[in-house]
Image (cartoon, rainbow, N blue to C red; front, side, top):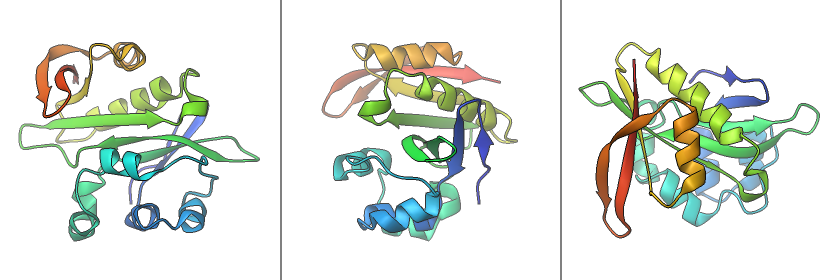
Length: 176
């Protein structure tokens, strides 16, 4: 099981195989019980699941420790806990110590700094892990809110990468 991370406003709950199964199989009540928080009405939806989990459920089941490494759900609130987003890594770091992070905040909770708070905490956590020397993230040049999140958590431009259908993406990185 992953590490629970607390920030001033968020509880970053480790994603488990049981959570992924509930989400990917459309069992909302089970997912909410496992995270102990209410999910947004439109989240997660099939499009989000496809973007967040680029491998099949079978692949995640085959090696959940590697596939779900560092993944967290953002939970806000004490009395009425609710999920506002997630931070995921693209699996365990590669052989060179590079970990890649992605994140999303549900629409009604955007613009409140949740992404910056959660991504910053997860990047700090990742860089404290033995094998990690750098954390990277990609975004599009036109996606200003995402660019601001990456800048605010101390990531700097590190190049570009082509997206197979949407064109050039900017790569940001923070090293130890």
